[in-house]
Image 1 (cartoon, rainbow, N blue to C red):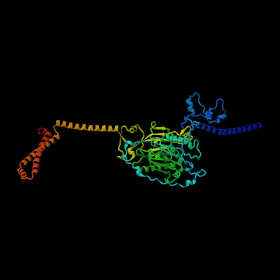
Image 2 (image 1 turned 30 degrees about the vertical axis):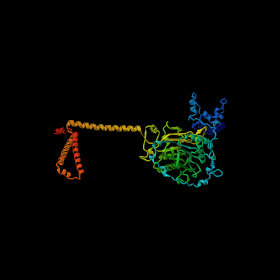
Image 3 (image 1 turned 180 degrees about the vertical axis):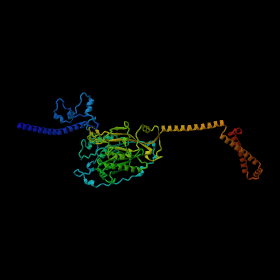
Image 4 (image 1 turned 45 degrees about the horizontal axis):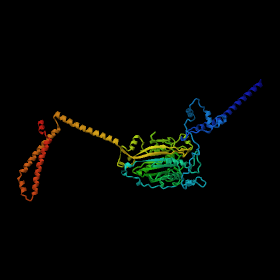
Length: 624
């Protein structure tokens, strides 16, 4: 009996040991398999996540395989899409639309990874700038590495002097009928491309991206277009400007640019250039300054920024109308929150000081890549909005808003769009800019408008002109399966026109005034009638009493005149004196003429009194 007990106890202990080891093995296997399954599910979901909506739907190659050969479990686990199909079984009896909704919950339109030979564009017609070696515009050593000594010594830049007289215009000399004009602002971060640093995922060489960038720029050129670009080296700017001046009707190179490198304030480093047409605009002033808290004209990194950042601005005068506009272009740091906040304060303060330089206070526009969303923690956009207005807030949905609404930045592989996108590129306009409402459209047609006299009450721009946003658009950046940049272009069209008085409203005001005057006349007539009625009823009139007294006074004047006549005729001495003076014949004639005129005047007085008061005797009888 004892032996059997020992055998049973040993068997039970071995069983327990086996169960414990078995559990441990199972747990280890689960811990190894579950993360793999989870990763496959995430990858399969990313295949249907939101991306750029410029292309059509594509299918994976492994789903297009022959269905007659059933795959093994290992083969199915090796493909993310197949694993997702196993992990999430579809319900039966579903329509094609419902199945598509399950497969593609985010309604992603797909992506094209490669172009066919027929779709690949030719770059034979591109004219690259001369002496465009990227090394000339980068602080590199012979080994193509960063020249750190170059950054240790900040560069001092001289400030450009501003001619204040050019900024002041006598508005009364401007013709209101010819002072209206439209202009466009096209802003785009085109991404630097030096051919030396490694390309990002989905990024093509600059020469391969240049054709699409130029096509977008040229297609969006209208009269009075201003281009503000960010993140370019000088050779990239030269490539764009040179191709803008190609294939034109004339031989003049009308397109010019202003900008400096952010490293040394000349040609070294990234530019934020402003491109304009010299046929339409005259340059009055241009300058650049660094975004830092030490010295605006020294190449310091500002606050907690990783790189030196710069802002370029230009003052242009429109040749046809004489209007002056200020254009600022910048690129804030992508890392430092404090640098974004400080840069926003610095740029807005420069704008305030510039506007004070002119009595006209010409409008200012600020464009760029601010690396901040509207509600960013740095509050940089809120600082700018204290002075300027985001052009997107001036749009009317369904009327003048075009293209994408979300995400001015995409990335070269659409990775930013997977996270919902970001709006970090802006066009800011003056705070007094107006929306294009129905009333504004009618006024701008100038059919029922009377222009105000410019400069009569104020010399400021906003008191004499209206600045209206006509339309705004966020354009596409991906064509033929590739992104031309990791940002999308944004475009804003504005119109400047003199303030006017609506003739229809003016006529209404005149009608109201005429009615008021008519009512006043009716009231006065009614009062006179009431006075006459009271006189007839009561027999008492103050006015008539005054007339009676006036008539009595006039009668007394007539009697006095008669007495004067008698005095004149009863004075024989005067006659004798006249006759006794033979040398005074002229005086005698004057005396006789005076007598005749006095007699006529007395007769006229009597007649007038009789005409004015025909019922004097009757009035007397009534009074008695």
